[in-house]
Image 1 (cartoon, rainbow, N blue to C red):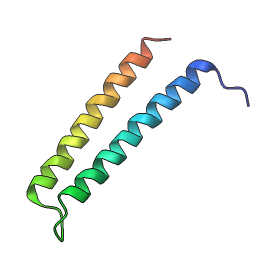
Image 2: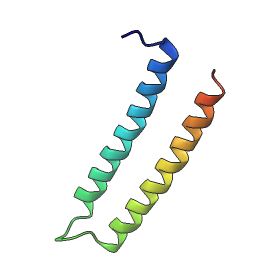
Image 3: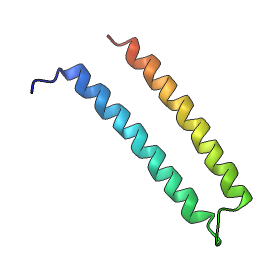
Length: 67
């Protein structure tokens, strides 16, 4: 399988961003767990989701302009 260098770069950057999202979600889950997710934990999860959407939009825009 022959993958172009640009495609491989796109894949690595996207997987790294998703990995960051998963790790951030796990950290918040562990930090705000007290028999269930607290109100502050829920707000932190919403913040992580918003940050992830903004990050992926920025990455997508940047990658689109690289080709």
